[in-house]
Image 1 (tube, rainbow, N blue to C red):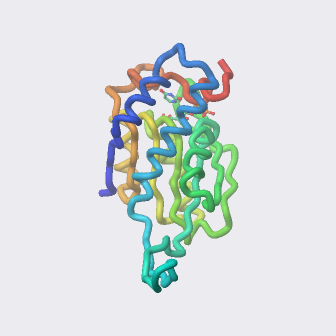
Image 2: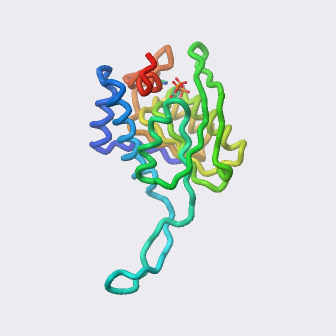
Image 3: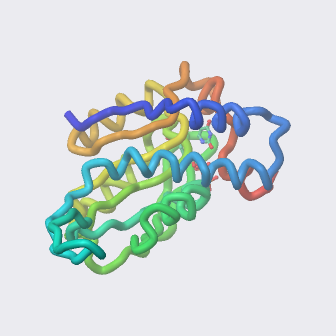
Length: 209
Ligand code: PRP
Ligand code: URA
């Protein structure tokens, strides 16, 4: 079974409270989502491989560590995942970005794929799939199904708020994928929203409702 980690650093908890508040407007919501994503990237990238490199300091020749050639791609699930990309790029600026477009049918809650564009070498990259919300898990499962069909094998899923139902569904469907979240909430309501959650992440990021 992959790792499941709640990254509950005090700074992250504080920032999450800001965006959960229904009075938080689009501008602040957008900024803080990126800030949380950046802080999470610090932990999500903890096991990035290092290699030795010989350098010359002003004092002597010395062997030090550098990130090895393992390449990263960030994969936002559209739309809301876009809100996390710039924050992660702050820490990993050379990462490529692939996009996968999914929307949930509001009645059936089933995800539908409408867009897929990845870097050509996703089979040799470490992928960070990002989406603020893991609710039923349907979108994350479909995104990872799609990526696996195209050859991806090394994936981590990163969200801000997860429901227990979604975590279980994703672990059952893709036990090889590590899951990182900033919070594990109580449950899903009848409309498939996370409780207490933060509402519709896409609408709050883009001001569409
Ligand atoms: C939201 C969210 C996730 C999905 C989570 O997207 O950003 O992608 O719902 O729900 P699930 O775990 O039950 O699949 P939505 O479909 O509303 O699309 P949007 O980002 O375009 O608003
Ligand atoms: N998608 C969202 O944007 N919010 C939820 O609470 C559930 C799914």
